[in-house]
Amino acid sequence: MSSNEDQIEKFFNSDSLNEEFFIEIVEKKLGISKESFKIKLILVSAATGNNENYASLVYRAKIKIQLNESQEIKNVDVIIKASLLNIPELKEYGVFLRERFVYEEILSSFEKIWFEKSGEKIHFGPQGLKFTTDPYEIIVLDDLKASGYVMIDRKVGLTVEQGKMILYKLAIFHAISALRYQKEGVLNNCVDRSKAPMDIDSDFGKGYARMFTKMVEFLERFDDCKIYIEKLNKFNARTLFDKYLNHDSPMKCGLKVLNHGDLWTNNAMYKFDENEAVDALLFDYQLAIWGSPVFDLFCFIFTSIEEEFRTSKFDELIEFYHQELSRALEIIGYEQHIPTLAEIHEELMEKNNLAVIAPSYLFFVKYSNNDAIDIEAMLSDTSEEDLNEIYKQIYECPVLVKSIKQLLPFLYERGFLDCKLVDAK
Image (cartoon, rainbow, N blue to C red):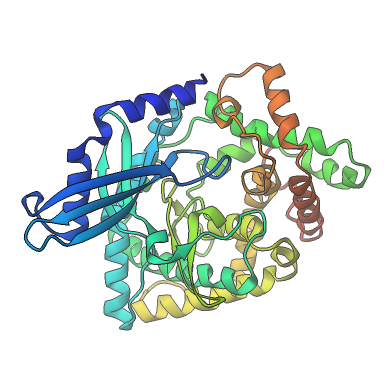
């Protein structure tokens, strides 16, 4: 049994999921006291498959209760997210505190501000129902699937219109955060990367940097990638990922926003009316950080939009985001400089390191083989032999290879691969 499987077994055999745990969830969700109902049935199942969630284990729980007075049966559907991976740096990095803060303090306050300023109701994500750290870090959320939301296949990606639906929400989220920052600063140190930096020389930090070097090593076998390899080899992987993991600088023009920090297909769900998406919600805010909005833009567009359109419609998507950001900043009364579209594009070039690393983390998105990736081994002090086996498994996936090779020409032609912001090897 692997260490991860052992952790899962301990989790389910511990007192973490006792009846009182589920009673408290029902009380919060339905706004009733435990004296008014009885739990009749609890069903817990995995909410994601292999290689669908890398930092936590996610379960779906269906709680069937009976109201004492009316004898009515009700179902309460929730998601239980547990941090079980044995990666100490994730705890030191404050991922649980960060996500808890967003669900407890940020989402509802941002939604309230937007309603007060615009008169429009908006929701950015599910409701947080329960948070605990003993003996495991657990977050319990509304199950969006029970409300009709679905996740789009990460390997296929989003249409341009579906992408714009996310960018619309993101622009408003960014705008409100900029207003809050203007008036109150960072709000909480847990979302200030300068207060809780990731040690790039830790096993975890080295593991992330290794993702880049292993990708470059793999691409060297393709003659049609030589022109890109020459550019990529000028970057220092350690410096690249230090800037990525500890990004906290505002736009050159001064705008600083709260980034989602891990914005990709599997962290969004859509509601459809027949075949048309009518709403989208975001979740998994454990990497939320202050900084430039292009952090979220690069991550989202390069990982989540259908491959045909993530490059051909890149400028259209950036322009749409800028229009919605400008509109939102004006509506809420942001008093500082509102970035121009030209300044957004200048920022994209200024922080090109965020684009350079995109191909190396595409395996999180495009890996489609059935065998599970040992993410814990990848990001820990693992032998070179074992690492080579893991990366061999990763890059034997043709869908992933195709996705990387489709993105590289765009990065090259736009000048994103020009080494000007990081130290050369």
